Structure formats: C-alpha cells, structure tokens
Image (cartoon, rainbow, N blue to C red; front, side, top):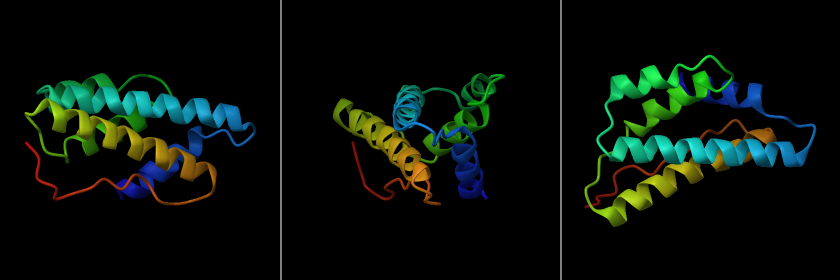
Length: 117
C-alpha cells in the first residue's frame, strides 16, 4: 500500500515537460528526505514530525511517507553512521524521483538489516 501511495504521489508531482523541472523536483525531494532523516537521527519525535509533515501543499502526502519510512530505519549514534543513513535515505528518494520520470513503478528501496554504530 505504501509503495502504491509513493508512486502515485511522485507521479502527481513529477513534471515530464522539462528535464530541468524534474531535476529541480528530484533535488528538492532529496533535500527534504535528508532533513527528515537527520531529524529522525537526532531523536525527532514521530508524532511531532508527522504533524509538521501535514503542510497544506502538494508535498504533504510525500512528506508523511518520508517520515514513516525514516522511522522504519534504525536510530544510529555514531556520527559516521548517521551521515551514511541520511545520505542513503536522501539518495533513495532522489533515485525514486528520477525513476518515476522514466515511468518506473519502483519507489525508494532502502537497505535493511545492516548493523551500524
């Protein structure tokens, strides 16, 4: 169900008219994903983050999915592993965005089961 919602959300906000518009969108999603994962890694509270994600704009549903997925990932305590987690999460969203522009139905695939600090 989450994958379907993610694909639909990305499809709704993707702009196939210009490659540069898609590039900007994907970069924006990456920045938002990095911020959400950084907050999660800094002991952000799930309820507070979900409330903040309910903004009255086109990104609201996407932000809520990001928060949900960020909390499916473990909380790390080592600076190195936190940076890796933030980069992987952000890159997963950017990759999914670019894939959605190519007609792919695959959302971000995050690595599970890797033990870190």
